[in-house]
Image (cartoon, rainbow, N blue to C red; front, side, top):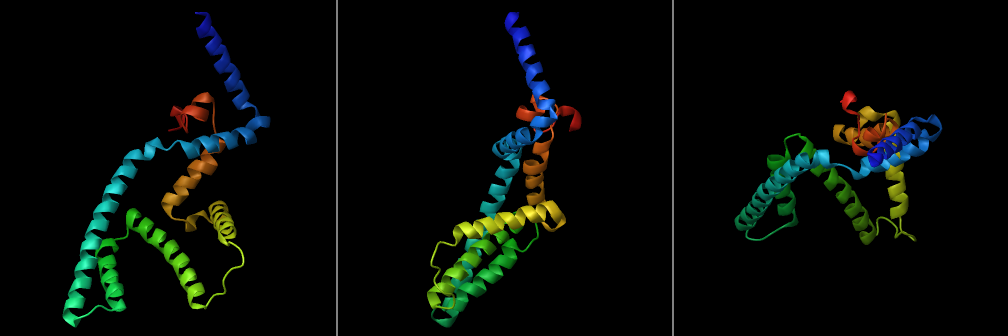
Length: 191
């Protein structure tokens, strides 16, 4: 019985501390860290997205390789244009529907393409070889832009990115007690 009353007293003390405004900024940082680490609610959606992504990739590879082989057979040899044309047609057929998964894949590929084109530009001499590693600067600028967009032009960001950033950067500013500070993101009364 003494342990139960001690636990209640401890919880009451922690909840009192969590309600003090002077600690709000530091506690918001901790809750933001917690929100970044706890994403189990999204597990089922992640599994479904993974399945859809892998099924689309399987269909795309089949289409792409088939179209490349068909073009090579018809022309008697392969050309660089075959790869581009087969991928364009396969991309439109398989990934052409505008949905969250296809959008994520396209955005991922866009960033990879930009990196590759920069490397190709350096390799071909169109862009001078950097004297230092530009990656830290690139990363800083990317994070600076995305948080600026989130804070001041949120509507321009993709809805899933808006949702994730709201969870990480805004939901971490609100709590009522230890339950919605540490265990759940929001209290059961606010759900």
